[in-house]
Each structure stands twice: as C-alpha cells, then as structure tokens.
Length: 173
Image (cartoon, rainbow, N blue to C red):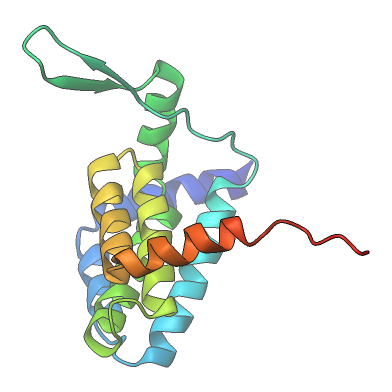
C-alpha cells in the first residue's frame, strides 16, 4: 500500500526533525488570551478523545508497603505497554502541550477556584494519569482541592446537627 508507506515515511521524518517540537512550543506560546486558551483546551480534549477512543481504561497502580516502611507502586504489564504507546502518541503529546498552554494563561488571568482553571487542571491531571505520571496528576488534583479552601466551623456543625433533629416528619391530626 503506497499510501501506508508514505504515512510511515512522514512519521520517520517527524522523528528525525527535532525542530518540530520547538516550532509547536513557539506556536503554543502565542496562546495569550482566555479565548485562545479555551480553543486550545477544546482542541486538546478532541485530540485526547481521538487518541484514546475505544481503548480500555488503564488499571490503577497497586501500592505495597516494603519492609523498610516505604510504599512502592507497580503497574501491570499490559498497562505499562499502553502507557508507553500513549507517551509516543503525537496526538496525546500535542494535547498535553495544549493543556499546559491553556493552564499557563488561565493561571495568570483567573483566580484559583475559577471553573475554567479547575477544568484545565482536572483535564491535564487525567492526561498525566494516562501517561502514568500519577505524581504529577495528584499534584494538580491537590491544587484543585486546595483552591476551594473550605473550613468547617462550630456553627456549621450546629446547623447540620439541628437540621438532623428537625427533619422528623410531622403527622397530621
């Protein structure tokens, strides 16, 4: 199939051309507005969906404690193979760059708990998880949780306990 051969040759040319990644990074550095960040995130979502469509979900890593008290995590062999494929998928690499560009702009222009910023962090965390980078994914997930900075007070406890006692249904006489 000459068409398939041409595709392979183009892929080999891309691997030989280290400047392509630099060109993409320069292109993404032009994303400076919230509108451009939204477009970048939409494209990243599309690329991720296209690259992972039909693929089974990744198996989460298992954590075991060692004799010295440290935890080790391991992925099963099939998941490791899929992660390696994902890391080499141009669409997913480009999606990551787009998410990072959107995150950069949104971090500069929006407050920490803004829904668009949270959505970008969440989407990037899920993509990092797809790449097997659970540490990076968890860092972003923790940033999301920390951005809400919710504190409980005694008054909240009193309100919730009084609403529990007042919630008995009244009977009609």
